[in-house]
Image 1 (spheres, helix red, strand yellow):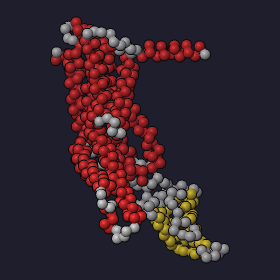
Image 2 (cartoon, one colour):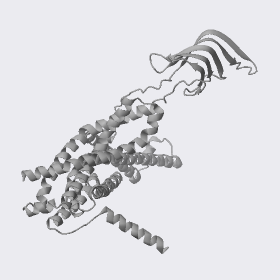
Image 3 (cartoon, one colour):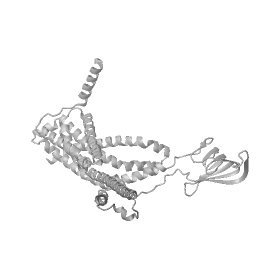
Image 4 (cartoon, rainbow, N blue to C red):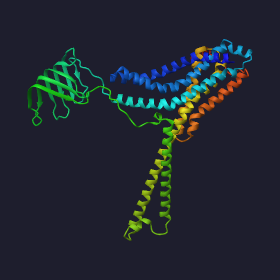
Length: 458
């Protein structure tokens, strides 16, 4: 059996890495389309772009690894079934479920590694990726000096340079329209000068020589002043286009480990208990005021016999208690949503890795039963079941956020249902019952035939 087990694992290695690379590539392409405009407009260096992709590979692997398991199992068992290797194993007295044992064990090991990855690596990668993307968002667009073209990258300044020397520092024919911090704009022209950044790499310094300043008179717009200068320096702040890296102590629910989220949930529980106690005290106080046989309690602070005034004070007291109770209710609702959000993420760190085992149980029987179609069948069925699985997760998370179902059922219902389907199909396969016979080619041919039939009937 050791030889058979080694053979089974060997047959899954190639399809697994094929599925992993294919799914990851699809996710990368979708990610590139989202940030391509930002990469081009911000003029990011190659190392920063590489860092963005490496950090975002973490969540991509967390999704693509379970799907790669399903692709591998479907393709491996489908090929072996098509080549009658499964039949040969049965003829040698090796039942199908024993062939699935090494695959399930390997999937369990992979699931354990993925749990550790989701708890230790993924939160830190998500955190660093979010901070980096925030820094990129705040980065100023890249700019360059083009002779004869206006540079409008700096708020309050418009630059026109007629000639730029090869060192990109010395310039000639400089015209600057300055509006920032002035009631009336002024124009600065110079025959030549130099341009470069200060030591902070954010302040642009333009040293001009042999020029003039033309400035309208703010009191009499029909007049203006013309000043000649031999040397003049212009400083433009916040002109740098370099990426300024920052750090953030704040972490969202997907940027925290299990221990962090459990600690936050413990604090949230305390807040919920405190808010409920405050709400109960205010309700009790309201009933005591209403049911009191004496005059309303606030009357003890009113030194008048005016009944209208007493009633007004009474109403104000009740309204204050109602507002405070409403605040407590909102506080409880908000904390419950946060508690559920953390609980969902905690369960998700376990449920998605366990999907590797579920997909192994599901993919083996499906691969044997859907032996026609080869690679297309494997990818098609994998995509279908993964979309179904992901729909369960998204829908469950939404229901959990609304507190319709618990976080456990929100994250584990997909594993339970698909796992039950996998066990049922495994039982049918072991009993050699024909449950499904699937071919991509036959499916598309049937679909095309029906479409043509509907089109001709019109």
